Image 1 (tube, rainbow, N blue to C red):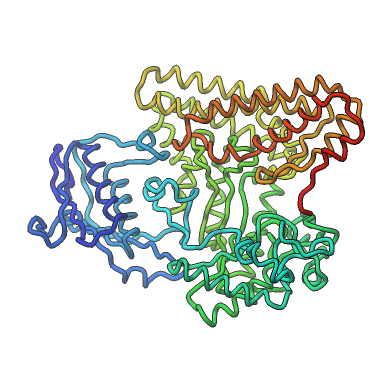
Image 2 (image 1 turned 180 degrees about the vertical axis):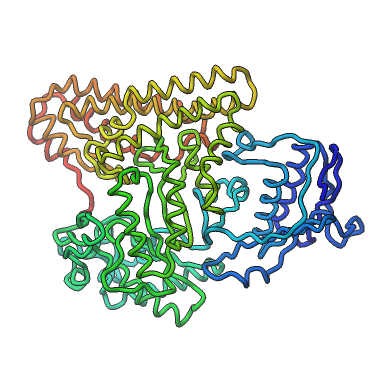
Amino acid sequence: MWVVKNGCAKCNVVVPPDADEVMGKAAADLVRIVRKVSGAVLPRVRSGSPRDSGTGIRLKVDVRLARRVRGLPPNDVFRIACDGRTVIITGAHTRAVAYGVYEFLEQTTGVRWFFPGSLGEDVPTRKNLLFKRGCRTYHPGFAWRAVGENDIPSWTLNHKMALFPTTGGHAYDQLLPKSLFARKPELFSLIYGKRRKLPTQICHTSSGIIDRALNYIDEQIHKKPEAVAISFCPNDMGYFCECDKCHALDDVTKYYDHFVKEPPYGYGGPVAEAHLSERVFGFTNRVAERLARTHPDKYLICYAYGAYRFPPKGMKIRDNVIIWLTHTCVGMFNAERRRIEIEMFRQWRKVAKHVVIYEALANQCWPCLPREVSPLVADQFKLIKRFGMEGYYTQMFGDFATNLPSYYLAARLTWDPYRDEKKELQELYRRGFGAAAQHIAAYYKVLENAWRAKTEDGSLPWARSVIATKRQYGIYSLVYTRRVMSAARAAIDRAKAAVRGKGVYARRVQFVEAGLKYTELMMDAVHECIAIEDMNIPLLYTAPWLKPAYPYDYVKILMLGNCDRRVVAHACRRALTAFDRVDRFVKPFNGKYILAPDIVARSSRDGVREILREILKIAEVKNPDRTLERKMFVTNEI
């Protein structure tokens, strides 16, 4: 069927009169992109109106499509049928119809959306657009599909991603609000022999905790009745309850070593050296059993994360619980790391019916520096599909300029995990950057090889994450060495030379260069921090969301040690100035999906900067004496 022939429109776009905003946007994009490709304007009409001739590209919802699909909702099935006179795009719901429109556009016009915004949209030009006869029904590779949060709705819709129908993430702090502590302290964690309001999890064995949990779930369902799953995840911290009843639930044996060689996690107080999966998921199961009686159509969703990341011993997870398994492929160039992650998948699938993946391609703890691992992204999608995982979500902070290939590939594979990743990346470079294609590919290959080299042989500690390392900045420098940064800069300079001018290719090269410039500035700050650490002054910083609480340590180092405080103060000022340069560079990119200013602003550089100011304040004290130790001592509520 001709959509456009010799630059002339040959059909209408027929939209139901009750089309919602999502279907309306898809129809508008259909008209806009066809016009951008061919110059032809497809008339947009309402079905049943006098202008509706019965032919054209017709959009409609058919809820019967969803009934043929089993698994977690939403059921995003759509069908595209063409009889030579009419194209009918039918979806199980309005968003699925929109997915069908974007699939139709990809096949007919060849449009691609490399990154959010008009600069990332690539539309070839042609005068003839033809769609072949036939009928095909499209099923998503995963029920839940997301690259980042829904703060880039157009790009999300273009790539047929599904919003997760849940109430959120970490939830114990909502289950037990601080205001409840005065009346019900027994529901809160016992830490070092005392019930704690902050920081805390819950007491999993207290007599009223299940009733409180069910009340919380009812509140969430009332607030968001369309939610399929209610978040029931522990808080993003330690401080699990240490009472005898709770601790009796934990496994302190070597059970977990039969499939992973990782030590117990140390959380909270003196009895925290244990894996906590039995405690967390046993409690989740008890609540899920009660939930099934009152809300049989609802699920609980619980992270498998941190101290409870591993599957529990001798326990099956109830079918109305969805496990959101925290995982990242970024360390899987290392054979042992890959074995551990694959075994984790295998063990979880033995005990849980519903498992979705929580990936971390971006990690603010780096902070938002490149981690180019596109070969691992492609391998991971095939793995999680093979193991029957039902969903995929990855953290993505809008920093496309630093992590473009991995993000784009993840977006393409969420719908179809079996796409040819090499062809996808070749298309990204060839169509996205024109004459600079080989140089942009070489630039990202430099970054990939740098990461591969330090994870493949195991020489990079904490390849999965860089949380809780005392030499955090030293680890950055293992990857982004001066030689690596020089090679990356040379590749970008060649790319700029290949596309001189102000065309779209030149602007996309500038887009990528912003990611390199940010990395260069961050590494300047890293080296200033390393100079301070080389004076035996560790930047004792754990994670970007924790306020530093270590002035006492610096008092001991600076006042009671043999440091030249003037040299230390000078080094701190240099590091602070380097971080300020990063801030000034990042600020203009806010909200443009190039860098990640909002996240980066709260990331590790702000935490370390606060520590640098503390060190500087101590180093500038005149005539110190030992009483300064007591005056400067700061601790948290524990």
